[in-house]
Image 1: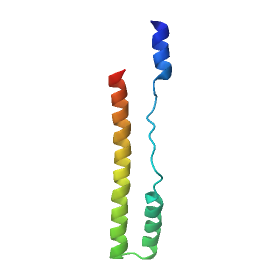
Image 2: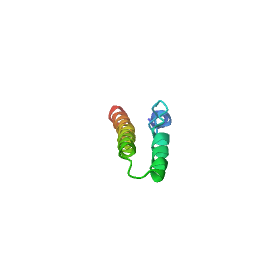
Image 3: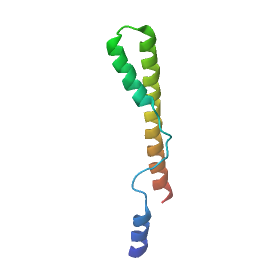
Image 4: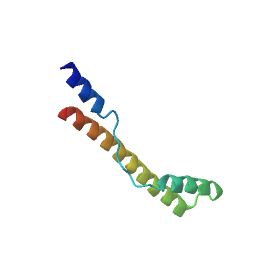
Length: 78
């Protein structure tokens, strides 16, 4: 049984890999923050920064949940 367990261990995923389309939200957020330094207290700019930040937080949360879910499922099946 040692050889079989070694074979399963060799083919077991060590980390979650998932494909994600390229997102330009981080670049947009950085540019808006820089623009905000030049034009502070601009209500439209602050609103856009808030919306983009929420989008980034959402993307990061989804990525975290997918990694966590896939790892949990792999351990349940094996």
